[in-house]
Amino acid sequence: MQSLIWNDLSAVQRAQALQRPVRARGDAVREGVARIIEQVRADGDGALRLLTRRHDGVALDALEVSAAEFDAAEAELDATL
Image 1 (tube, rainbow, N blue to C red):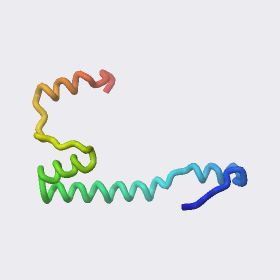
Image 2 (spheres, rainbow, N blue to C red; image 1 turned 30 degrees about the vertical axis):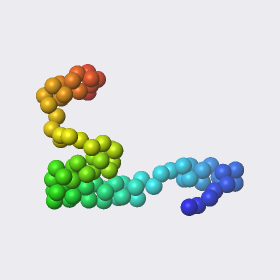
Image 3 (spheres, helix red, strand yellow; image 1 turned 60 degrees about the vertical axis):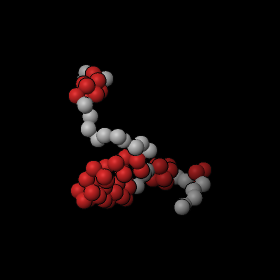
Image 4 (cartoon, rainbow, N blue to C red; image 1 turned 180 degrees about the horizontal axis):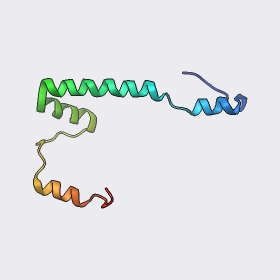
């Protein structure tokens, strides 16, 4: 981790310090998504249940959404979408 003394930085250095490492972060996200896709391809619904527990903290009884649940969720959407 790099420590910076804000008052010692030029305007350009301050702007650079505030920039996020988009490329590196994007690559990490892409790699994580690729691992998830491969896990789901290999293990199907079991992987979906495991990943939902791990990432969302929820243990689902079913992975299928009923028509009524879908309609209710759709009704909540902003009309401009």
